[in-house]
Structures are given as C-alpha cells and as structure tokens.
Image 1: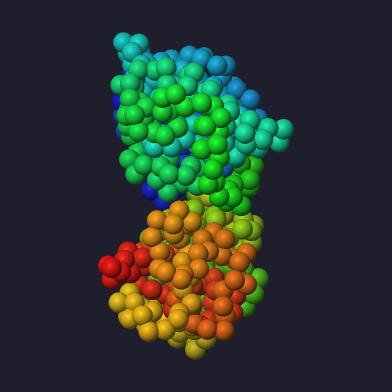
Image 2: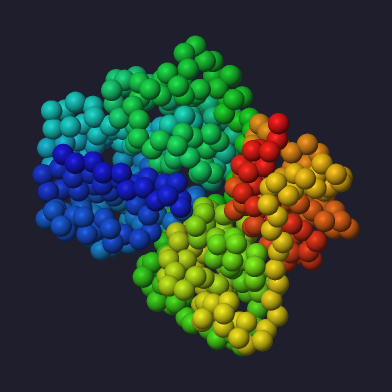
Length: 455
C-alpha cells in the first residue's frame, strides 16, 4: 500500500494518491490531472476512485476530467448536490482498494457534505484519515462556507463540534492525519506549516480538540476572527458542481502573444495583470496594471482581489512563464485570458509607450525619516499580524479590504506602505496607483526588515 501527498504550494492544497494491488484512489485532485494519470501509468495501475472530501470553493478540482479520462468513479459524501454522475456514499460505507479499505465518514461542519475518508491497511488496521477541510493541523475548517442557505454559521459550527468529537477523535492516536490544506489557505484561520501529522498530536496541540471544551466554547472560538470569505469562492463552487473546460483547452485558447499596440487597444476593457517580481514592477510598469507576482501566493491573491472572474485578463509575465501563469489562474477559475504582452515590458518600452514606477525605500531610511517627521504609514497585513507588532501610528487596512477603503488613505501626502516581506505591499501599491493615489513609497522587506531597527 502506497500513500503520497501531492502538495500544491500556491494553493496551500494537498491532494492524495493511494495505491494498493494495482488499484488507485485519488483524493481531492487539482485541475491539472496529468500527474495522477502518469503516476498510475508508470506503476501499471488503474485509477478506480476519485474521492472528494467536499465541494471545494477555493480551487477547481480535477474530478470531472479525471473521471472522463480514466473511467474512475467520483465519490462524494452524503448531501452532495452536483449536475454530473457520481456516487453518493452513505455514512461509513466501505470501498475496497486492492487489499485495503477506504471508509467514507460523514463529518459535516465545514460544509454540510464534508466527508472524511478513513484508510484501513491490508491488515484492516486504521492507518490514516483524509480530512479535507474538516480538520487541519492546528486548526479546523471555517464553518461559514456552505452553500446551504437554511443553515447559519452557528448551526454548522455545532455540527463540526459533533463531527470532530464523535467521529474523528474516537480514532487511535497513531492514525495519520492528511489534511486538505496547510498554512496560507483562506479555509481556516491559523494552520500549521506542517502538512502531515498524527491524530494524537492534534489532540494535544489543536485548540479545537482540547479536553473538556464545551460546544458553546467551540462555536464561539471557531467563529471569532473570521474574515469575509474571498469573493471568488461561490463561482468556484458552481464550477465544481457543474463542470468546466480541461486545463489544456484553457491553455491552448489563452496562450496568445499580443503586440504592444494590440494591448494598448484593449487595455480599457481588460485587467492588465503584471505577474513579474515586485522589484521589476516598481522599476517600470504599464500604467493601470495590477501587480500580483508569480513568486508569491499568486492564484489565491488573484481570487481575493480580482473580483470579476469573467472579466478578460491580459498578462505581463516574465519571459517563458506565460504558460505557468495561465495554468495557475485556471486553478481558481480565472479562464478568460486574452493573451500576454509579446516581448514583455521591453516591447512596451521599445514601442515608446507610457510607463510608470513606484518608489522603493529601504527600511533603515524609512526608520530615519519616521524619527524626524510625522509620516502617513499604511500597514496592509492582516489584523492579527498588526496586533502582534506594528509601526507606531500606522494605519492598518488588510490587503483584502484595501479596494473598499481607499478613501481612508490620505492622498494629499506621501504614504509609506509595508507588509511582512514586501510582496503584499507592492500589490497594495499597484492598487493605489491604478486608482490615482500615486504619492506612495513601498518599504523594501516590509516589517521583517523594519523590526530589525525597532528597539
């Protein structure tokens, strides 16, 4: 029996490849299915099952196309509603995979259909649980994302409490926990950076599993501090319920090299998305473009900030990374890519078209200025980050809320912007600049660098 976690760092997402006696089960595949097919082919195995822990909101699953390509059976837990053929497992229904067994355990709470899959080894011993967004390492799934309208957050949180205590915590401490996400996801609040653990460790360290915790305490703690869910989540749910194009089709339709004149012609009707690094963007970019760099949490930030999933996008990408950008956008349902600027920023400059730049300032220079003058300082980290340490007098507007709070930014004087390391602050700078707030300075290295000079 073989179990492999296939972790997609950009999505903070874990899918799983389970193989036993030449039969394979895939749990929560991402949209690009080739890796799963290739693994099975290499070992001479057949993909028999595709298990979905729930209807995903934060990424497009590969379940439908993987089933079409392999003939595998798609399995959801109770109360799952989709438009395609699938098997709805009953609670504790068993599925044979070679000489091993996978048991569907209905664990509602994160969503009404959420299901945990228990893997028993060839000796019928409980080996691992694949918990999806029911149980993370260090946290549990937020209970406010279900698409069922007659249940409120408290109802789902109450269900989650029961699911954890009556169905998961009763298992042995040595059972391995394979969660659906790690640190960075919007599906929980405070996940561990680890992506594989044991149930025993979680019973000791996870606040939501502590002994003698009442349901009322659980509901209050799980629901406290939740930010609004990203606005692209409902559209991803609908795609996962009804279907979508193959990733290769999207790539073929989107990989269009556009000359600078064509980009200039279309620029008013599209989102011009610059996915280079923050230093290149600061030095020179096309006016009105939005920066979200490939070398950060690219796809989730696109989903968080570019609210209109159907609005056409033109990319400005590092040479040779256009395909990567399109693929990663498709993971969160952004399929309407018109193409990319052929030749990148160099071709734009050579065409004598207008460019802009954003001032970068070193942390030590910022500290020196701040000691002499009353500066306007904008902190775009999360509220929790801000509470745990910030620059005195700074205004905290988390990046996810910036577009709705531009009026709070003083456009009459220079604003000095920082995040943790400089990635989010450059995204914020691009949003401000594209909205006409141009008197800004980005602090290089963010609070990580600033804190080195704060006594």
